[in-house]
Image (tube, rainbow, N blue to C red; front, side, top):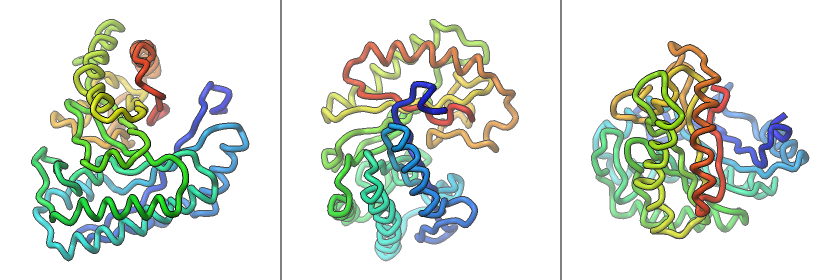
Amino acid sequence: MIKSMGASAVIFSPLWHLQPASPLIYPELGITPFYSTLNVMINQASALGLETGLYPQIGPQEIVKEIWLSGSHSDYWWEIWFESYQDFILNYAKIAEINKVDQLIIGGKAVLPTFSGGITPDGLETNIPIANDNRWTALIDEIRNVYSGNLVWVTNVHLNRDPLPEFIYEFDGIYISVDSPLAEGNDPAFEEIGANFSAVIDNHIYEAYRSTGLPITLALAYPSIDGAARGCGLIDEACYNDGIFHLDEISTHPIDLEEQALIYSAVLPVIASRPWITSTSLRGYNA
């Protein structure tokens, strides 16, 4: 079905949970797919001629947010967190290599406070040990040792673009999740959406390409609900979101497939007019 709709790739996003008041990351029974299940899905996608990506993620978002807002952590806490995160990522790096996955995608909102220049959910610059960037560099080296495909970093654009790490040049591309507000109300016009999206690209996204020269994938995060053009403004005024709208966040909004189609119709020509954008992904297109 995905192939017949014109898609050329599919990204799988297995989720592990960060434990409250703990630096440890665990698979969650009933949420994290078994490796055998994930292997089958990847191989089925490949058999259909689809490129594949693997984007391991940490949640739930509210727990991640609480931990990053809880204050500074000790060097020992960070050491345990990185060991746990490394185990988590390397598990999927090995799965990606075994299954010849085209892209391994890491980073995103959940790890934004873990590197120099990163920010916490309240928008403040993170206070971390100097060793953290070295830990990231070491992790990237470990990933390269077990995975031979493209390694891609995730960042987000809301009201502004999240900062990129200094080690961004160690990656093969940047995956930018976009849920910026494109309209103020629930009855947006085509022209309004297109103009506001053009401004988002020119003011926030182009700099990521200009400063790195890396291939850029835009991931559109606008759910099929009334008011979707408000983007991350659906969550709160701070627009703190990881690019996916979960059911409990949008359950009070009625389904509106027409508004979602209007958004895509307005923004895709804008993307097509920027030749430096390599590809487009749809996040939560049927949410």
